[in-house]
Image 1: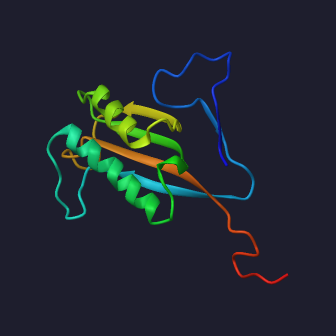
Image 2 (image 1 turned 90 degrees about the vertical axis):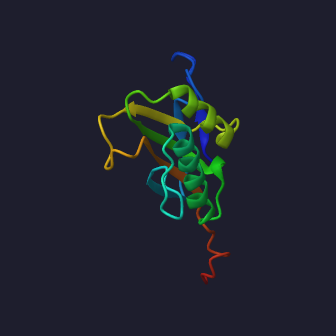
Length: 139
């Protein structure tokens, strides 16, 4: 499906990501809105680590709603509040993604929509388009 490449004439990734990703023609893209650390019941943990854990659980749930797993993610964009510990974010992300290395961007921002949110992460995932035979289309 997607092909992850780190060109030899570009520095090695400094984290759990790939420099480039190509997606084959005929692939469906799934765009996941920015996920914050809010639990399904609407509660919001106060610690960065807990919010980060919930963020990746929310992404996992969004993917599962489309029959996908974390390995379908090709791009992550993370928005972090200043003063948050990036190492914690990397550890939690690593636990959820394992050896999978999507393209990634992380930036510090002055504030998110609510000052109680300590991070927000959006994702793009890929899903093979259904074939004409499996979608019930007649020739």
